[in-house]
Amino acid sequence: MRVLATAGHVDHGKSALVRALTGMEPDRYEEERRRGLTLDLGFVWTRLGADGDHLAFVDVPGHERFVPTMLAGVGPVPAVLFVVAADQGWQPQSEEHLAVLDALGVRHAVLAVTRSDLADPGAVGIDAVERLARTCLGKVPAVAVSAVTGAGLDELRGELARLAGELTDPDPDADVRLWLDRAFTVRGHGTVVTGTLGAGTLRIGDRLVTGDGSAVLRVRGLQTLHEERTAVSGVARVAVNVHGRGADGLRRGQVLLTPDRWLSSAVLDVRVTGEPVRDLPRSVTLHIGTAAVPVTLRPLGADTARLTLARGLPLRVGDRAVLREPGGSRMPCGATVLDVRPPRLTRRGAGRARAAELDALTGRPDGAAELRRRKLIRRADLLAMGFPAPAEPVTRDWLADGAYWTALKDRLAGEVERYAREHPLEPGLPAEAARRLLGLPDRALVDALAETTPRLRSEQGRLYHPDGLRPALPPPVRAAVDAVREDLARTPFRAPEAGWLAELGLDRRALAAAVTAGALLRIADGIVLLPGADAEAAAVLRTLPQPFTLQEARRALDTTRRVAVPLLEFLDARGHTERVDDQRRRCRTDAVNGGGRESNPPARDPRAPRF
Image (cartoon, rainbow, N blue to C red):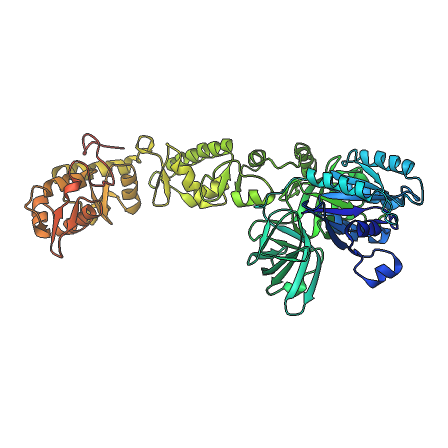
């Protein structure tokens, strides 16, 4: 299906023309037919040839009082049938409607010069073609027609068929954004809404959310051109039977969306076309889709501005909208969305700086450029803003600019080293503290940085430099650790008593620092041995008849029960030994020749100082 809107001055024969083309009545209300004046949107359709596409028309009113209604009809539609009457020529609403189309960036049109039975269409057609050519519509084909005599209708159908063939098919997998132009109740079915589906696919059973997120609705039925369907892809005129709490509150100007795919934006940065930004009033109305929202405009640059909306809308970078002064005393302007998540402007000079940034933005979605600009963003948010994801996430859903990510690694390594110097007894920088220091929004980003930075290692929520970069222990602590190491060198499995450690000044923090520095191996709380003692103990236990008891292990290791119990549990946890039953253990055969998991693998001499 292809969908076109009509455009043109009041009483130039738009409704009569689509009636003649389709055989259907676009004016839905008796008052419209009685007065011969379109007051609201009308919807009719026809088939282009026996096997051609369906062509649907959104017929819009042409009176100046109903320009907001015209905007609601034209907003979601990609092409237009522009109408000028041969007996009246170019008129004020012809100019305003053309300005609207230019603001929206509509690029496909056919010009119909109506009432050619009442006046010579030649001069009017030439003038109108020239006016349209000065806009984004460019040079368009013109056909002189008469809805009364039928003259020119076949030629017009041919031009419309050619136009339909030039329109590209939108992505059927795109996120749905259905701007509503009607909402009504059908007895036995509930709420039905209609609109022009620009892209994506609607299916029976789909869940949709309202633009403000206040309601989640289910698609219970679908129609297009009065035909029941199970699925409809854009571009198409659709009627959707929706069910759910809040459905009865739907109305024109609201929108239904694919859940979790859109961001609601109440502050936008835009590029304005059609009039200098400085000349625009502070209060204007933003028209996009079928929505009309009051906004406050703040000029930034020569053609850029910040818009603060009265209510949030689901917008994406590159969206085209219309800015119109209430009352219509001046021609509407175009607005291209540049940023749907702009920074706050709170400091002196922030507006000028922001204007300079916006000068470099084109409004064409470039995921790589946006990632460079934002440095760090969730993939879902980038997609919701309208940008393709340029890379894979660095962790979870987070995308990071490559240069920024590299700089973060360097900063993190520097912060870890600084913390180690300033906290010699607690050299590991807490990961949460690192997150705050780097200004990162998620702890997972710190973990990802540590994992991919060779100069760092992470243990139990703290970040350390590897062995070669560990800071030296303070002299008093180093002297006390030397005394412990000397004692353990004589009796490697007789861990020092808590009282002696306290006399040496080795409290919990000092022991933790010694373990972190690789000078001691922590077996359990208050139990420390030399690094590599676990592997040495496993080697001794393998000489015993298997399996062995705790008492046998204690004697073989020449240690006490106080040390033997946690040491065996330590060896169990690292795969050196395993329980046979409640009383006995055995050495694991796959732990021989390095199969076990050691917390601090020994260097060539396990008793050599490592600080």
